Length: 380
Image (cartoon, rainbow, N blue to C red; front, side, top):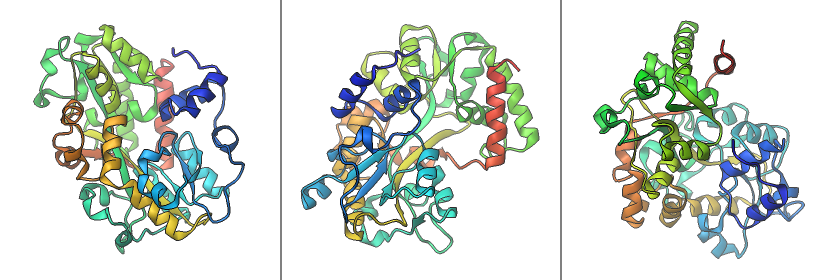
């Protein structure tokens, strides 16, 4: 288990921007803090009148991620942070005032249905034509009239990273499969994520269900059987990706559910690993911006900020510093070729075209999947 950072050390690291958003979530969860708000993370008690206010993930507020905005206005937006998508939605729903929020693409439809956001006039965004078309038109972010409610920004995958020297039969994309986590040959040497979506969705893909984000009761029963089988092969369910990475690096495990950043870190450390594009489906997430119906700043500031985040040099920072994919097609020719190769982003359009995008799971189905995950981990 990860050591929980003392709160003074945490504040110091945060002030130096030395923490990723996942570090923040893990540390706060460890001390029982569910909501990150202005008193801890922002020196201003409240936003100035008519000045842009962001509500976002920690790490997404850095000046390097909107340089044109800072250059034009000579100051940074005011900002508060949230720990997860549900918290962001519920705080805005409860009346929290912010101009721009940065939810994951799979949740945007919930914001639309809640009446919390407004369409974005993409003709006012100079970099919009350079965005990947697959990201411009994610399901649930564009209405029937063609109005866009979302500007994609960064993206990444949820898949498997594995040791090529320890599981050579899975090397090569033609051999990539979620089934490595169910392979009896590697009993007690694989690790799943301790999260309902991190277990039930891959199991749904293995089961070949029609839609893993809208499973029927019969399909959920199949998933239960598969997860019970996998539990007996699983060494541990990880909540800290860093701990799981260490286990993979040492050879304690040969494969793990992981994000791109884990692959990039292990590769940079010289660990012989490969990141899968599973034949059953490569799960892909995207983060981006929405415009709320509540104005704190001005409309000009809103559009200037969003356009600044979509600039190609911002995408380069996202790729090189965060190991995430960028939404701007031009960023890939500008980024370090070695990093592009390490991340396996030589052909981002092919990755996006072959991706299975995370979707919002209907609440009644999500409750069943959450209960299923908890019951399987409890040995039921």
